[in-house]
Length: 321
Image 1: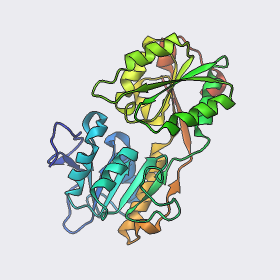
Image 2: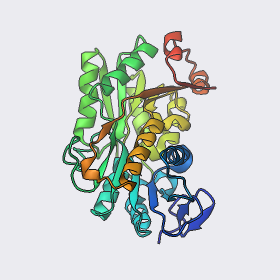
Image 3: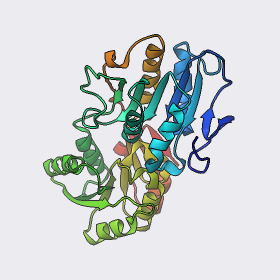
Image 4: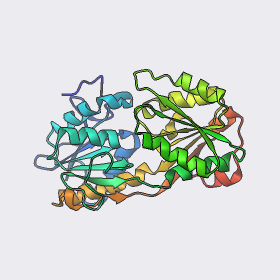
């Protein structure tokens, strides 16, 4: 049983520290959802219902996610959900997916928002996943170039970009961006922060200022996501514009760009429906979700004293005022 203090509990009926979102029906399948419930849960529930599986009638959905996005507690969260003996487990992000596959090789797992499921050891290949795991990937070999081009469009005189991420991340994560930057004539400064309960982002931003970077590209890593609001605050303090992952849009940074989590969640619901109808994860190829969204925060722009070009503003899917 998961400790209440460690897991976010977000709605109506609680099972220990697991959220059960609808009335439990005897004999109906249980669908476990290991993901941030704030927006994605409603999207998942609606998409699942569209496929004929209404929560509380045809399925029971149970949810868990570490409080404060504490990724170090993900294995405990996965274990708690799996203790409820779900028919299928949905996981959001590579950390959640690795935690789930480390706990079970029997329960079908559907992942979403995983950049490279093969490199993460989740599937044998995108075409033939194998084992008990499938889902949708956000892999895009041109994504780093798209991020940097967006920054150049927003700041035409940009010469150097800081890459803020996890010191424990795979070197290829930084290398991919560095290579894309070189092709665009941009210099880079890597700011690698050690994981800890209180990562030293202050030192990272102070280093960025000393090296005269013009913008900060926040990478999607285990050290940045839980501390996205702190990063946004420091960026404003040091007057540095940021481009962050799409799921950081709530943090207060200038721009967020990346795969639509909503679109990925809809895809995962379709796969859950297929598994509930008898399909095996090993027979469902990993799908690619390629739709990207840009969110611009005008409040952050005002605090930074920045006026973004009309061409960039017009390309935004959402503008926060």
